[in-house]
Length: 490
Image (tube, rainbow, N blue to C red):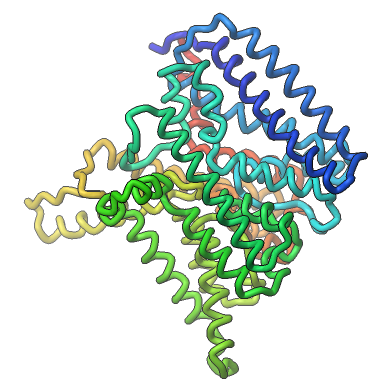
């Protein structure tokens, strides 16, 4: 039997989170002052005041709340956070008139916070700098999700805060870098900030202006996909910028805890990480397959031609597996086999404890091992083949949870494809749209491809895909459990 929900503590934590969003929304005001976009400042002041009032009211309401936070409270808090952040974060777009339709503004903002990167904008360059910066900032905030804002809330939720942290991070094997959850959060955020800074400076040195560099760094490190240009990275037509982007996309898809071990010179811990090894192998293998399948051998006569084809192949492979969603070419002009490889990479996703979406490489590896050993059992019925990951034998109940999660993931995509098809979208658009939003990737196929946007899809489809983005970002359970009667029973 469930205990009563700690409503006051939920309201208190959400109040603190809203105050943090208000603080983040001061950043676009600074940008507006720098670029003299004074008339747009008021469009941020309104949601800031709203966030402060609601946040303050929430904290006052829950000031005497019991500090205990369980799994149910954690699920409600993380799901409500994305919704509340999006509702307030969308206001500058609608109030300024640049995205007057609230459905579109909500979709765009949620796409940012969930690091999906799908856009309804057909002329991104028409947005003023402060709105472009806020758009990119939603990626950066959402990149490490609740962890980025977790530190300010620890005094409120105490030791029970692990349930809030754990609601968003379900992995086959837990990778602890500190016995204290607040220390772990601090380390992850530090890594996040360091990589963002390095990416910004690298893009700037490679040829981007500083404003574009910091915007793209927010997008790349969060594996989001928003760009300040309609043509994405292709706009710059720069080999250096493309390789810098590939580098930081790839390493943003790596388990962030490994950077801590690397910093501590615990090289053996990094070497033994199976997920990193398979992440590297899958990425290179996929890039090579895409290269072979779309390179034009009859017309490629120089090293530059082959290098350009390989670069574009590597770029799209890394963009897909990290679920970033940036692009340098119109991949709809490539053969359909490459699209299949892309979709598989998008479903796989990057590493656990990274900013990537998708099923995650760790789960994919474990499932492949499970299938392999099941085949071996057909030949050796009496043999026992323990499944190991990172040197640890996985228990049967954990294996079942991994298989169940992955099956539900695929079933959601199939069911969503069916629903979107009924709403009027074509099969290619419905399937790729579901994979894109479920895995939080800013790439689609057909009329959702790189030269198109989500602007013209039906209103129902936008709201449905917005829901799917949250489901994918919060790894299914935290959201879908809210719709079960048992969740709300005492």
